[in-house]
Each structure stands twice: as structure tokens, then as C-alpha cells.
Length: 148
Image 1 (cartoon, rainbow, N blue to C red):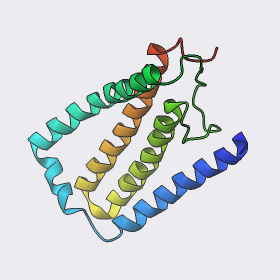
Image 2 (tube, helix red, strand yellow):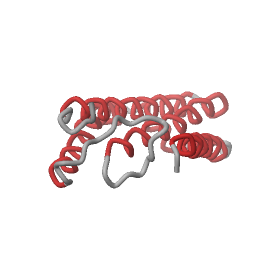
Image 3 (cartoon, one colour):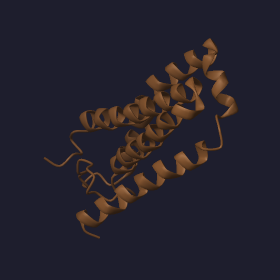
Image 4 (cartoon, rainbow, N blue to C red):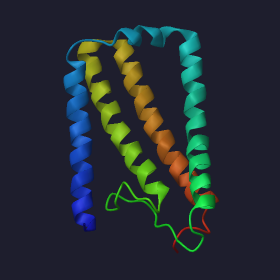
């Protein structure tokens, strides 16, 4: 498939995630959303946010060590195939935007579901940003694997 076709597939999947999340949240607020006001849960969530880039870096590092040394990685873009066996950065790049679409839908549904849902949407958006940050961090750490 060409880059333009993959762009359309990615946009379609993100729209599917956004609409699907909106449909799911029409049923009302998630009962676990009330846990968002507990300090333990908030502290744990913030700590996990900062662990996401390190987890991505660790996974990409394992892929860099175990894959063929002569294969160079391209920088991820919206025109790249999201499920590549050669380049793990494509998957995390796509995953970040996919989660971001779901997070935006959750944040939008907070208009009728309340503050707990808004906080859940903000956390989902922050998680997607941390995935992007982990992808960029991996590109810097493994810049010898990247194509110029």
C-alpha cells in the first residue's frame, strides 16, 4: 500500500476510535471515574504517566538489540504503515494518536458525564502525549538506527 493509502487507513481508525468511544460513553459515567478524586489513584496515575516513555524506550531498545543490525528505521509519520515488523516506532506513533482520539472523545463526553469523566479524558490525552514523547526519546537514543 502507498503512503496515501496508509494515511487514509490511520485517519479511518482514529475516527472509528473517536466515534466508538463517544457511543460507549453515551451510557453514562464510568463508575470507576469516581475513583479519580482519590489521591492514591491520582498519584499512581501521575507516576505511570512518567513511566510510559521509559517503557516505550525499553521496548524499542529490545527491538533494536534483537533485530537485524543493518536495517535502518524511518521516522514515523502518518503516511507510514502502523504495524511494521521492522520498525517498532511506527506502532507507538500510531498508538499515541489512536489513544489521543479516544481521549478527546472521553473529554467531549464529560459535557454530559461530569468532572470525573473529564479527568479521565485528560489522563488519556496525557498518556498519548507520553507515548509520543517516548517515541521521540527512542529516536534520539537510537539515532544510529535512524535513516538520515
